[in-house]
Image (cartoon, rainbow, N blue to C red; front, side, top):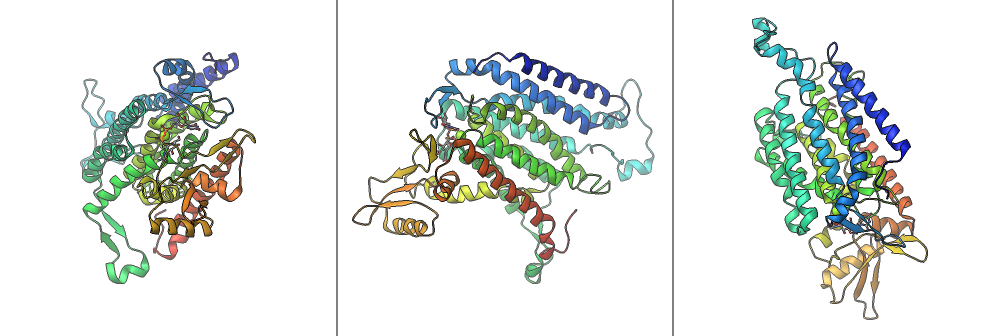
Amino acid sequence: MSAALSRTETLSLLSLSGACVGILANTFHGDGEPLFASLAFSGIAFAISYSLIRWLGDAFMRAGLKGRDMSKKHQVEIPETMGAVCAVVYLLVIIVFIPFPFYKDIVAATSGGGNRDLVLQVQEVETGRFLHRFPHSKLASYLSAILSLQVVVLLGIGDDLFDIRWRHKVLIPAFASIPMLIVYFVDFGITKIVVPVPLRAYLGELFDLGWLYYAYMAAIAIFCPNCINILAGINGIEVSQSIVIALLILLNDALYLSPFTPYPHPATDSHLFSVYLLLPFIGVSLALWCHNWYPAKVFVGDTYCYFAGMVFAVVGILGHFSKTLLLLFVPQIFNFVYSAPQLFHLVPCPRHRLPRFNARTGLLEASTAQFKKPLRRPIAEAMKVLHRLRLLRVETNEAGEVVESSNFTLLNLWLVWFGPKREDRLAMEILAMQLVCGLLGLFVRHRLALWIFTQDNL
Ligand code: UD1
Ligand code: MG
């Protein structure tokens, strides 16, 4: 990969940045429109990440942050951990963005030397101001989101540098979730869930989960980052799946904003919050995508996977739609559950489970794990049942012992089902499936849910 940007690239990035700076300057006039500012910042974030990924590639290689692309004829080494660049650009951008949704509020509420206070009627003070843009209390959420993301990025970079063991890194995001859980506790504190109609006779209309609800949210913060990291191994899949999830959440957010829902709606601010965090995320991710899609010129590294998953966990938890969020993670949840036998070492798990590249055909095939020692009886039998259900491919020896099986990942299962494929073809099919699942999830959430709940919160 050439480190220098081509002339066309430079011109395009410069004009994009120019346009975005123009929009930003414009948001200072009139009322200021944080949504446009957020869009402009996302464009700038894209341009900066795109250039930095190019410029820093060699420096990363020299620092030893590189990986071998195992699914190519010529396994060249390319820079790894480039997602860390995106994560840092993202953090800086959402920090610079802070004044935009808030500065009008600050002017209205503080007594500055310039004496720009608005004189508020007593009644207004007591009932709370009608904050057109972004309620002040959201600042706490926003800052805790930044803090949580920072922690996860820090620990992710640690993992990329030192390859922390799996059982330790599962817990990384749990620490990162503490700041936002505490803000949730102080700010929102709702631990009740709406009970589906058929169960109301036993549990009542609302059921209080208490501290279990916090355990559940911490579990989401652990799950989202890790599940993206293990649905990995072919060019572009980590970034693309994250972009698809981000777009699906944005679609869900849009349903709560005008023109779809009359303003003000109780959930408007939560969903604006989510939009402000997701737009720049999509900006930096697209820049990474351009370099990581087949044939990859850089790898994203674990930092990106943790960071992306944490962005989703943060918007889901602080935006109060963590259950909807899970509907958008169906392929990842499947992959996680399906991987469990290998993750928990019921079945031996090789260091890499990515599909196997067949150099003769140039196609990817399901990779396998070989078992030198015979597996325990119940496990071997269960695997044979999975084989018969076409949920696994198992090889047995003359004695009927299981000696080999395809690795327990969604990517390998897809190859077992549909046969060998080119790497980019496999990625596109998985993404298409993910998109269909996500759209179905949203449909279920907003339409079919009416059958078991009395109302949709739209
Ligand atoms: C996770 C998976 C592992 C999978 C790996 C691939 C689990 C428990 N772990 O491990 O099975 O093999 O991701 O990312 O499911 N690579 C490629 N092509 C790609 C992407 C990665 O060859 O398109 C290779 C490169 O050599 C790269 C390495 O994978 O250096 C990165 O692996 P890493 O992200 O460190 O693996 P884990 O996240 O630990
Ligand atoms: Mg990884």
